[in-house]
Image (cartoon, rainbow over all chains, first blue to last red; front, side, top):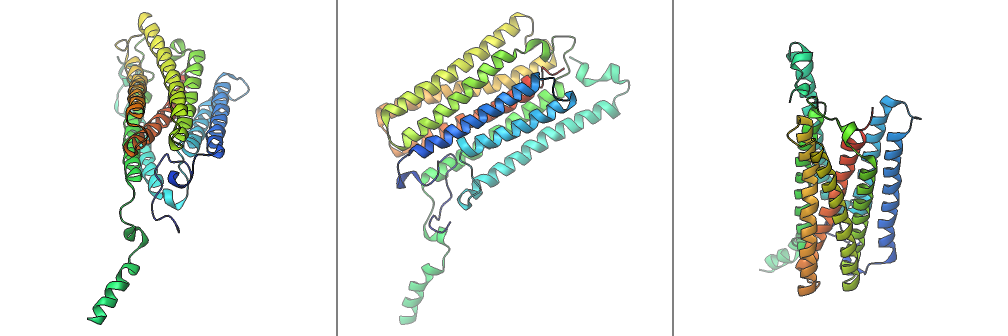
Length: 131
Length: 210
């Protein structure tokens, strides 16, 4: 923040583009991101099909892998960093993640509650079994 | 009089650095605004994801995800979209370096991989509808087609946008407006890949679990 009064635009690779031309290291950032993303994706497909892992733990493992891969994409492809010139981008992202969490978790919580408590005869009235 | 002049001279130094420098360059303002749009788009997708999660067992006696989804096809789709995102990143670097030939080459790779992804997805949809698993069959299939179809529509829009941008590069060259639009396109394309990560994890992989 000392020499740069402005934020960095989301998606911009490291220092401002006008001060230097793209170098080999910029491409290396994308390549590292691609390599890690491929490894994580391969692990996801392996976890789904292996019998080595305790069955009920598989969805949790897949969720963790997805979160990790989202982080890889954000850091290596979208160039979101923890630097002070990225504070606004990170804050907007954090707010978006909060809303996403509220929408998904809230919907699932309410609909599960409705199924469990409000409807008589779960076999007959289970919303999830209706058309 | 003398005092007033001195005050005028001191004043700018007391202001914070950002205000002194004036508003940020348009590139930053535009990209930040587009970033906020993308986050709102992600919030919209989260609503579709929530609807899918609620309705995933409402198959109404029809086919379930485990019977419909083909992991091999999903793996190839994932590979296409990831490689397309990588090519888009390299295209951004070529744009930054103002290299026209490399920009066209990587844009072509980005477009071809994105189009291949879309073809596979449409083939999957057509196969499902032909086997009686159309959106109107069950609430599960309605939610599935809405969620995955919405992502497919975004990819389609991205392909059209990329074509338009290449025409703009050809006609207008790398002027500032074109560079800003290309930055926004790169943000859009990478974000679509993030959404696909959640799609293949929650819809396809968790769908085929026993």
